[in-house]
Length: 292
Image (cartoon, rainbow, N blue to C red):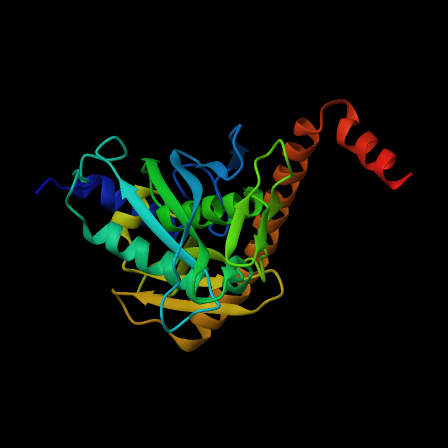
C-alpha cells in the first residue's frame, strides 16, 4: 500500500527545533491559519476551499426517496468523502485509508449528528417521500489539515445550496423547476466548524492549522468542533501524548475564537456570490414590483 513520504531525520529535527523557538517554516504564528480562499461554482451547492496548498471541493445533491422506517418525519442527510491519488500518492482508488475513515467519521459527527441541518424540513410526505441530501467532499490537494478545510467546504456548500420548491397535492409531490419557482435555501439550525490543533513538546505546545510536514512531526492532535455562539459540538483527542486538562480548555477557547473568524469569512463569501448573481439588481426590482 502506498505511503506518504516521511520527512527525513534532519528535516524533522529542523521543524521541531524551530517550533521550540515559536517559529514555523511558513512564518505564521502558532495560532494562525493559512489564508482561506473560498469560492462558489455556477451551480448552487458547490464550494471550493483552498487552505494554503490544501484544496477541497464540496458538492450538494438532492433526490426524493422513502424515509427510514423509524424516522418517518425526517429527511436523509449523508456526508461522503473522496480521496484520490491526485491529492496525494498515499491515496488509492477503491481502497479506503485510515485518513479517509477518520475524516468521514469526524465530519459525520460535526455536521450530521450535531443537527446542523434540520432534517424535518426535508420531509415531503410523512412516511412516504422525503428529500435525501448528500454532501460529497472531493479532496483535490493534500498539504495537511484536511478536516478543517473539508468542514468549511461542506458547511459553505450547505448554506449556498438551494433546494427545488415543491407542492404536495394529496399523495402527489410536484417538484417545480427553476423557471417556475425560485429554489429555497436549506433550514440550518447552527453552523459548526472544526479546528484542528497539533501537539508538540509532550502536549505543552499547541499549533493550529498544521501543514502536512508539521502533522507528520507532531505528537498528537486535538479536534474541537464548535459554532460561533461558543457551543462545543465535539472534542476529539487523536492519539499521541496525553494532554493536560488546562491545555484542552485553552484549545477550546482558541477554537471558539477561530470559529468566529472563519464564520465571518464564509458569510462575506456568500454575500459576494449573492451580489454577483444579482446582476444589475434585477431581483430587487422584481421584488419591488411584486410588493407594489
